Image (cartoon, rainbow, N blue to C red; front, side, top):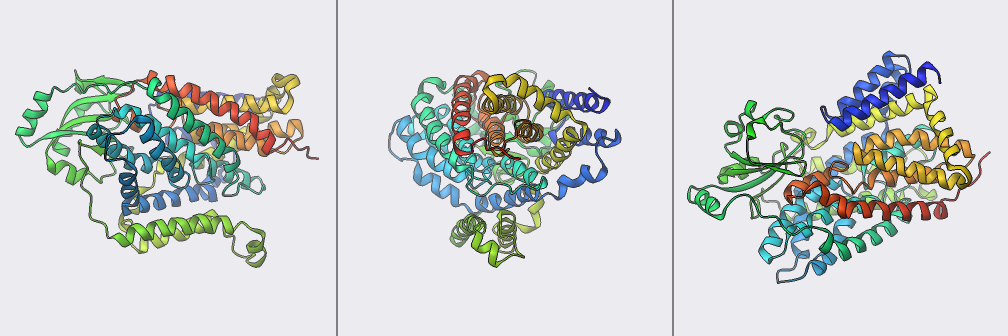
Length: 523
């Protein structure tokens, strides 16, 4: 083991510890590591910045804008309201109507806005109809995760792997390549949720506010509002006592839900984190002022938060543009178009670019505020992931670990290596972030395939699924964090239903992937 391998290994260990401790945003943690690798001579400055010009990374940025356009058009809000029954129903019947549609939308839109739109509506609907919202919010998050496994654009992880493949001179993934494995996983996963969530998920936990307190607040023109803190909230990582929330936002914090805990005492000592749910006492001006602000991921107050009126043509135009993007990117990959339009690569990058620009000029989302709709931390994380992957390859660490995987696999051969790589990627994504997990796993997948002398595609598909299918913890996926506070879930609630989901998806994946993408020998 040479100096370069030890240097990179120590750097990756430090990165994992920093991400688990959650002292800084993932983007700055990965950027720090990349700078260290550059300073240590492991990678060149060109390799450090290569990820920032990668088409996969830029496609993720463009899809943030497309998703925001669809969200602001109000199309999804209209659809979800029609899906939810107005009369009394059962949990199972309501889930059967709701979850498949949620998965279908999340296959083509960023998961976070889908959950942000659906969660408060579902929560208010469940209260009105007399059902427990806890039977719907975790399933809602899981349904978006499952849907994201079905297409190239379903999750940023797929685009990261796609971008890394193109960087290595490989063809990359087509729009519906992942559907062959994603659709079976989604069908079985949704059936598991629908059949078991009624027993595995808790009944709704009562709020810590007495009805008398809520009534007293209403008498003063106030009401209870719940907000989920976004990455742009200015008080993150600060103690509440050093951040005058009431002066800034005109609302009083009465409760903080953080990491599965409900905190009502010594609130000033609580250090605020992204994904925390704050229970506030506020008047109507709060929801009007901050209802569409980027500092809060989601807001609910027991009734629909009024939004800006949207002309009907914007709803239909947003959906039409989304459809054109999907169909265009799919058809553009056909040999006929590649042959007749050799100078224009009509892939997802092309159509996402066109769709985002058209939405901006039609003002489907406010073009002057377009930067606020992009999650820059995710983009920096993705861009740095490319450099980390290069460092693992350049140092020889990826080859060393791949050789270890081959030896551990023993008589199971490539299939055993696939299962081991899937498991390692899954553990990393449950503990840190999906994009970082993909970054670490990609060079291992490539080197492992080379050790066995087989096509790397089955290994790439495995890390796409494993890095995205994190169900057992709320920290593995942002949508899980959002619903954790909204549903007042505990950490163990995710484990009870999420761990079996992890196992089911893993078994399906390592069984079907070699059948769909065989281990073909390459010279």
